[in-house]
Image 1 (cartoon, rainbow, N blue to C red):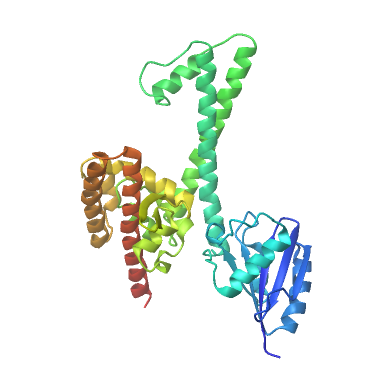
Image 2: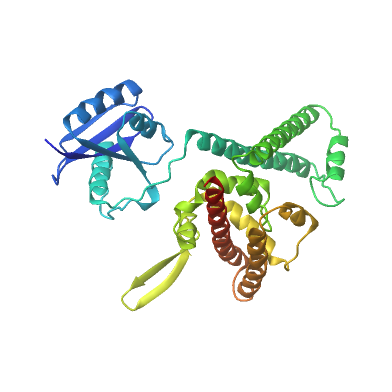
Length: 370
C-alpha cells in the first residue's frame, strides 16, 4: 500500500519523542519515545520504512546539532530541521511535554507551515566550530582583562599613559609588584590573561591559514574588499552562511540575519518595530561591528588597498559604491536617530552588498568550473 508518513521528532540528549502521522489523520498513528542512540534509531526507523513507502521526518534545531539528521540521511530517510524562531505557536497553549511537541511538529510539517535551516556538511560544521571557538576565547580574554583592571582599581592603581592593552600598558602591568597573597593573585590573573591571549593568537593563525586555502580564498578575498571586513569577519560570514546563492534576493538574506525590521498593523494602526533578531546572531554581530566603520568619509586606506589588490574589479567597484552609499546613510540617520540604530540600519544595507558580491563570486566560480 502506497503511503506517506510525516514524523515529528522532539530530540533531547538522552531521549527522542516521536509522533508519526499518516494521511490526514488528526491523531498520530505512532506516538512513542526511545533512547537517542544509533542502534535504537536504526531499529525504529527500519521498521517504519518497511511499513510506509515514504518517511518524511523533521525536528527542531537545538544543541543536539545535525547528528540525527545525518543518521537518517545515511539510512535513505528524508529529514529536515525546523527553525525554532519561526515555528508557529498558540498563545493559549500553556502545556508543554516532549510528546506534545513532537505531535505539534508532525502536524505543522504535514501542513507545510515550517521553515527549515540550512544543513552544513561535516567539513563546513568543523570550520564553523573553529571560528566560534575563536569567538569564545575572545570573550574569555575580555573577561580576564576585566579581572586585571578591577584588581588594580580596588588598590587605587590606574594607567594614565594612553589606551589600555597597548605595548606600553602591558609593560606597566608586568612591572607592578605586590606583597603576600596579593602577589600570588596578581600573578594568577596575569598568567591567565597571557595564556588566553596566546591561544587567541594561535587560533587567529590557524583561521588565517584556512581562510586562504583553495576552498575559501576566493570568497574571503572578495569580502575583505569591503571597509570594516577583514579575515575574521569574512570567515564568520563564510562559515555561518555557507552557500549564499541559496538566497533569491538581498531581502531574504537580510531576513536570515535577523536584520529586517518587524512590523505591526491592526486596523488603522500601523507601526514599525525593532529588527526581528530571528536569524544568525554571529553574522549579525560582525556586520554591526563592520557598519561602524562607515561613519567615516569614504577612503581607501593602505591596508584596504592591499586587501583589494588582485581582486575582481567588479567586486572592488561594489565595495567602493558601498562606502559612498553607507556613509551617506549613516550620516543622514545620525541626524535624526541614535547612532546605534543608525549602525544597525547600515549593517542591514551592508548585508545587501555582501549578498551581491557573494552571488557574483558564486556565478564566477560556476563559469570557471564549466
